[in-house]
Amino acid sequence: MTVLLGTVVAVVLISVLFIIRLFIVVKTGWKHKAGSRGSVAALVVAGSGGHTTEILRLMESLSAAYTPRHYVIADTDRMSEEKICSFESSKQHSDSESQFTIYRIPRSREVHQSWTSSVLSTLTALCYSLPLVFRLRPDMVLCNGPGTCVPLCVAGLLLGILGMKKVLIVYVESICRVETLSLTGKILYFISDYFFVQWSSLRDKYPKSIFLGRIV
Amino acid sequence: MKTVFVTVGTTSFDELIKNVTSSEAAQALKSCGYERLVLQVGRGSLLPDADSCPHIRLEAFRFKDSIAEDMKRADLVISHAGAGSCLEALGANKPLLVVVNDKLMDNHQLELARQLHMDSHLLYCTCSTLTETLRTMDLSLLQPFPPGQPKNFANFLDKALGIQ
Image (spheres, rainbow over the protein chains, first blue to last red):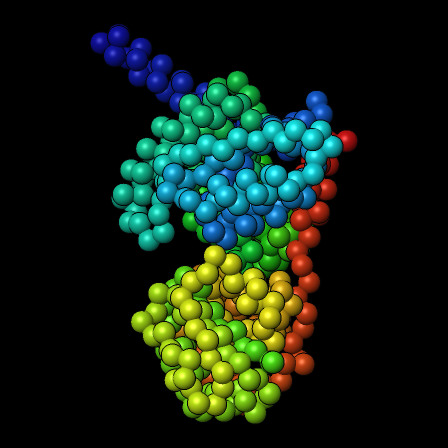
């Protein structure tokens, strides 16, 4: 009986601690100056098609301080790898050596996939995301909407909750979203540190979001 | 030679292809001075022959690795409402007429086309109003579409992350 009670108390305590940590990590992210050491290791989630085009437009504007750059693409995506490689080779960095790698993980959600099977495949994707993010320990995750970014952001969040490393989550909603957030956006709105939207109507609906006009 | 480029992206949109190559639509285009019609028909079942439209020079293909060249050579782009196609045409500074597929259920892709129409960056019609729109359209009313400013994003992030 005492063992059972002890277990229950332990589980409750751990859960409470976990929630408190989650709250602290999410609420204090904006204070975290990841770039003060001079460079920011970035994990960039490229989706497919339009998502990849948009995120590469953003990457184009970032300075060489965002090094190294780890790109993650869905394993069913053929086009993105080509786009990333041609983008990186065209990027003129002062340090001449371009530092980037591409990783593949299973896609967490295909377009039009049902909810139940989405949950299952997202869990599978999480199994791949956790070891990847724990190994790379990026300073930030930059993503813009493909389903693949949810498990990667959750893995980043977990690093923070466990006190191993604060991983900033930077989300940029696609230019296509004028009135409503994407499903990914709705989820990441709560755990991202910087949440960008590109239409003022979304900024009005989501007060935590950052609106700088059109940025892609 | 003044050229119209019609694109349906990766979708199929037979109704648009059928309507834009109809005798009435071709005549409307011709009276606006367009002499060449290039069709990118995607997965559609219609792939019109070069001689299927008597009023205008016609070329058709399904897919290409890049349609940037076709966009560049066009004087008018007629597109489905897909965000990628709209942004590519506007990015190339081309007058754009978006034809909405009203047979499809409302999807989020329409959001962008509708907003860009409200901001006068593009014209907007359905297949049934296509010919009428081609007859009466005034492209000079369209507003230029300035490119997005990723630099604003980079500056914000640099400051937020404490990068010198």
